[in-house]
Length: 598
DNA sequence: GTAGGGTTAG
Image (tube, rainbow, N blue to C red; front, side, top):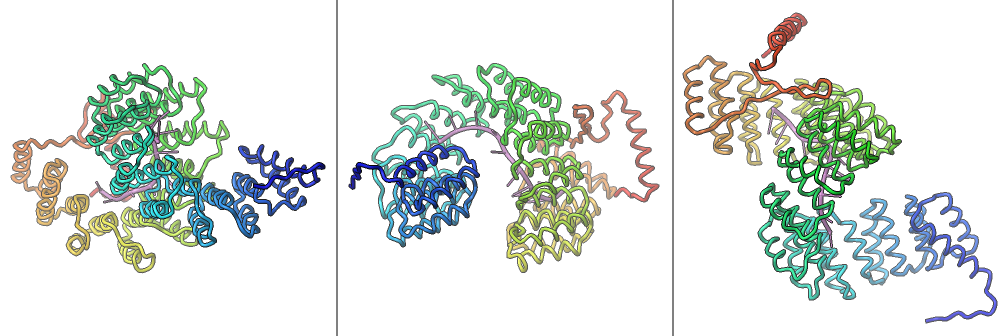
């Protein structure tokens, strides 16, 4: 170790100290002009090769999202040390340049610099929640090969990353966990969390019981397991047994009841909660919104703002998704208004959720307005807009938008894009175009059609009356046709009254979904349309004797923050006479302008 | 290490 004892402090040392101090202060904020100023000072002081200063500069530039500058600074260093490599890797990860992070990792090895605990934890963090099993395995191999100092943090992160990679990852995580000589409560919690995520509740509970000591996170993880499995009786029993509870415990149980559809229980527990935070409010509001309970959702949203909580990204996305699902345009607009009021800077994800909400609620102009204002549109933005146009029958507009997307060089259509494109063709009756797109998927875009794409094309052919072609396509599929495929074909048989094909299709469908009531009533409707009333009666008898019941489909409409639900032949409304008069008038008007009901 | 989250055929 070198000691530098000088009588007179040279000038560069004092400026170095000043710069170091300034850089340390910059550590947590990201003021670009300040960083640039310091950068200039560093160059003036000829310190841009200093291995103590440069990592701090790289980190500060990365925080200001100036990755190119950071790389520039890094590239000027002839022999970076492990600390600088780590800083550069972290900078790439912070700026979502994951492949660059790994490239730097490989460079550091070919330059003979050995990775350390920080390197691995940064790389593992980049994999976190991304379901990158092969990448995690690659890092794991490196760790096994080169070893690391006996820090429990690395194997713990490894378990965690594996656990985010689905069932295969969890079994890898178990191996790491079992091989660990020393475990702390985090190791146990991570593996239990992984087991809970893949639905291995029994195994999770076994480890929970085996644990030497549990903390609140352990209890919450296990509670979430019961809650996510919709085992609400077990969850509630467990919740009551907990030695202590925090806002997370309460949120888990509220979310569990909410997702299970028991809003009364969810609300009762929500009201009882000693402390509520933004996440809790989001859970209950999105819960009501998802079920179309506009009044409750809206009044709780107002209440949340009244207690001084402003929606964050999570709140907005959750509520928008719920509104999109149930068509609550009113609440969606309200949340959008508070985004504008709070001058909240919308991320792409937030904007995408707005596009989707407006599109699904039928407000296509608004959807397009939000869409066109997104400066850094990603594929999800395009897909949401395309799908919005598609489901509302704007086939030509959707296809035009698709041609715009093709001009975007940084974005390539993905399988979801083609679902939207095929759906657009179906809803606009563009059968030939749809078939062309379907065939171009693999040849032009290298995307192998999934069963979902076949579903779209079968719908396309089916609605276009080309039932035999549709049936041939199902039979020639390289993939196993699922119930949705047969169901789509059955729907087409109903529209075009093809009793013979319907019988054959139902036969296949019943094998896949023996107790789905919709399938039987669909065939019964087909018999009815063909005037085969004996078969209708037989179907009804069969359904009754097998105990299959069909809840009739319902439509809903939102008027003044209230959702009204109605079914076919519904006469429950006090003004139902007037309603049917109006429907009659509307359908006459429609016929006059050339609309024919199938 | 635990709670809310964007696009996917009918």
